Length: 473
Image (cartoon, rainbow, N blue to C red):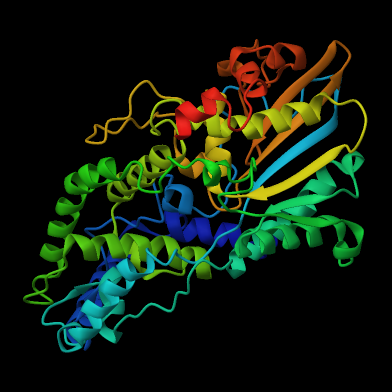
């Protein structure tokens, strides 16, 4: 007689597949399960909440991850290479000899003009606590948190705990991935609290606990007088944060009303008279993004109330926003002009054969967006504010400039010569659209990149010259 020992996999598969169980016994087994389910339904004494079956789980459904579709408010993630057919890593026979880092600050609390949108939602819920605390019919699971009320505990502007972790982790990762680039160099940061704190957390990750004595952190004023590639828009008197607002208004009028109707219809039986407005829906979407930024993935109940297609419609709003006030949606030549300061600084650094091997700079989402625009990267032929939304559009803020986004411009010393490569958020990004001949890794010969029309235009621009004045005055 053989051994009676049976591993856990064998037991599990036997239960699932019915192996070794007579057919008649399986019938009685299934019947007993049905009877048990009926008894549970009969005696279940809390009927106000039922499992959500009609609304898909928005967090991960059929490969959909909403946290990769929150636009520039997305938590950091590594996207696919652009295009996805690019090879990862660096070309064979090449070593990374220099690198120019442009890093956005980590996750933050909402801006002062965004928080009232969230607070307006909280006020409506709390002012109608008698309604929300006493549902009159079965309530979908994803809405059950309303029974206990809801309020916002968000601050404004400051770096959050996830944001601190993002920057520390990136500092550690850079030190480990490129040990030969280690440089005790000056670090630049825009003089905004969340940017400065981001730089310090990165430095702690890269240099260690004595980072303050190892490298100098130099703050660059973010004002109308200081010319800076970190915040070039500040010295452009024509630039305005409201650029692109008309497109946002047009798109919101298209996508918010259907979401409002679906949510109110969903809750009508449980909450007779409920009347969430489009402004409330906007507050819910903001609450999803900013509670995630403040407390981490899966922390916000609001993220679970939306369908994937609704999250994608909201993502387009964020994309329109970034494109409108810091990208290709800016008037005339403004986007390219403002981004030229980054391009010229980066190119000049990579071309120098002497000096520091690593440049570390910290700024904003606009810093990265303007740099991409100056080089003609992530460009689309059209971007209609009324739709239809192109699912394959190049300008997607979640992939380009999420919280803690970074551009790592690398000089490659290869057997065949010197090349330049862009790693954007951990993925290779093809430089071919700038006008140079790129390889299967997205890199170009440094001289070829340097001689492209866009790079030459950036190098030939001077703050205050005729081209700058035409764009900014």
